[in-house]
Length: 188
Image (cartoon, rainbow, N blue to C red; front, side, top):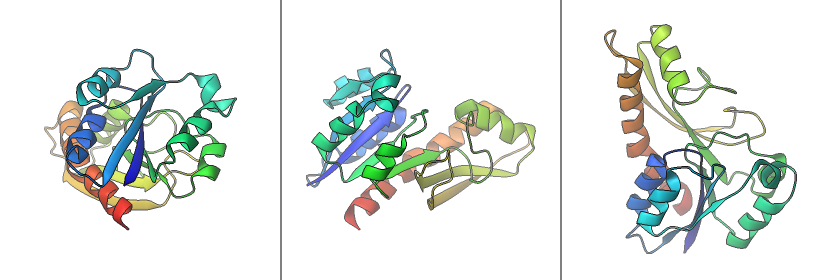
């Protein structure tokens, strides 16, 4: 059986989507969801889905081996960042080379880097009058949003689209493609 560990910081809609996608798959198990926010809504979603969820703080993540030790216990085949906003420490990247992936709400290299997440990205896409946007699923390296691209999917941006409209279109792409890419990587 293949094991996934998810990281999330917010509401957990991608976690729920991934959880529902794999809930009846006997070959793939979501071992745990790790979150850096004690009151993150993703914890409620995990409770509903019957998925283990653990909270950690900045010290456990960046200054000690606590999170690394937890990950080693689960021995995941893939670590999935599903709305996780902190930069991944080098010790995790070194211990799980080419096993950490992220979904970014834009067509990288556009609108990537520190501070470019969620509505910040969609507002920038609108402000710059982009005709298309989308998602980028990529491997995580030591720099924000610079890892090797696994898959991109695009959507049209209409002149009348608001940042919220753009967000809805991008979320639809995330929900459609992210679980499929995870499954493909696990079956490779």
